[in-house]
Image 1 (cartoon, helix red, strand yellow):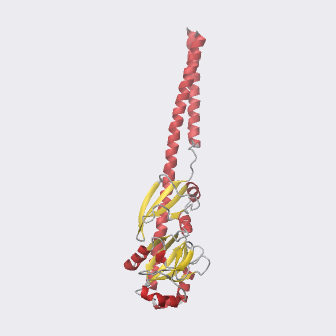
Image 2 (cartoon, rainbow, N blue to C red):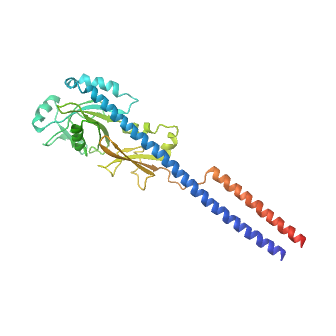
Image 3 (cartoon, rainbow, N blue to C red):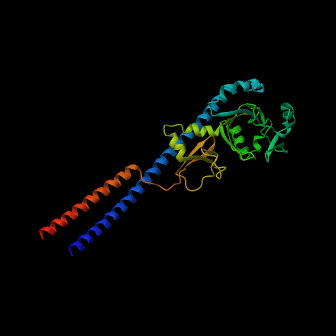
Length: 318
């Protein structure tokens, strides 16, 4: 009978210890999961705020550049002027890809403008440049640098790009740098800053390196961890279905609920920044949690041994 009682005691103690360890495991797992989510939200917030700062810096730089050109309207007809600006702005380590002059052209001015640039006003359709149809107003590129394989073609009507005409009109009317998110027919997203230059309809167009803008905004001591675990995206109110900026553009469009969203008004656009977790693997315990769980198991084992020792002592006394 004594052996049966002691065996029952050992089994009950083991079941109780196992239940306590499983409960502790669940609590530690939930704690580590919450801590990981909080850490990812912190990294996402840091990246979103830095990206917003980078965009605002680009807008402010463009405003200063516009002010310096405000009294040089006549010299803008000289290609050397734009070339001089491009040499100081378009460096390998900068966030700027290209620089151009956009003109607001009315239908009565189209023939003279096309003769000036020796080219037609054109629009993108299905990846091909076609002569632009008759429109109430055009916003063609008068010039663009650098003149390489990635250059926007001269005469391209920027107003023909998706969601561009309204922003161009606002830039003309407000006289402030505006963010221009556009999508040509090939689906490639463009991020530009456009601002009014003079009363003759000229506007300055600054093309941003969106991929470098996102990467450089995450240049923090924890950038490696951030880029590995957090995907930073940005949308505009005009195009909420597809990101205008994406730190991982080669991945499919993000789905699900983001870790966080932050809204900023930048360059006349309401930009919504979001952060998504990249690692979808099931959560695991951290090393400190495993250590705590091991110490708990050792403590329970000592308590069970002490309990059995007391049972043996009571048996001897009886």
